[in-house]
Each structure stands twice: as C-alpha cells, then as structure tokens.
Amino acid sequence: MIENEPGEIAMSSCYTCREPFGFNPETVPSVYVNPATGQVLEEHEDKRTGVKQPICPACVRVINAARQNRGLAPHWQRAQP
Ligand SMILES: [Zn+2]
Image (cartoon, rainbow, N blue to C red; front, side):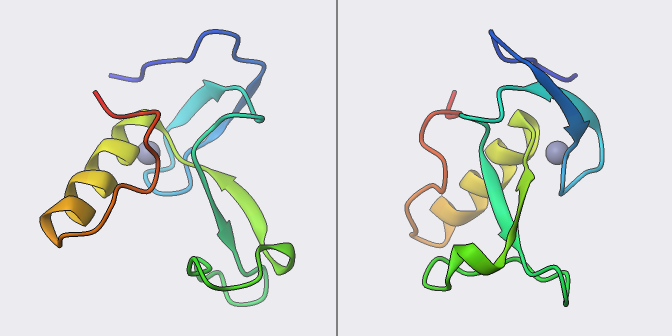
C-alpha cells in the first residue's frame, strides 16, 4: 500500500521500487544519484554532482530498518513509524 504525504504536489516513481507515489519535493526522503553511472552517492560525496531521486515511505522503512540492523543511524528520521 502506498501512503501519500499531506500537501503532496508532485508525482513520480520511487527510485528504489519504481512504484509511483505522490510527495512534496521539498520534504521527500531522497537519494542523490550519479547521472553518469547510476550509482547512489554516499553521504560523504558531493551532492551537487548528483540527481535527486525520491524514495517512497515503504522503501524508507525497509532501508532504515536495514541500516539499524547494521548499527547505523536511519537515513530519514521523519518517515519512521
Ligand atoms: Zn519505493
């Protein structure tokens, strides 16, 4: 099930699962992708070289849970249940 955010003003496909979802581009959890290689930029890399790609709430939960299992802080705090 796709949960849409209040105040959503954009529609696009999730970068991870490709499901379309509505979101606010100002606040949507996202990753930056190198347009030349298609690889997600790591946190220490220069985000100005990347293209911003939205991540849907379901994928945020999966990614954050995987990070927490590895002892890492969640990427996106806001989308935590
Ligand atoms: Zn997704």
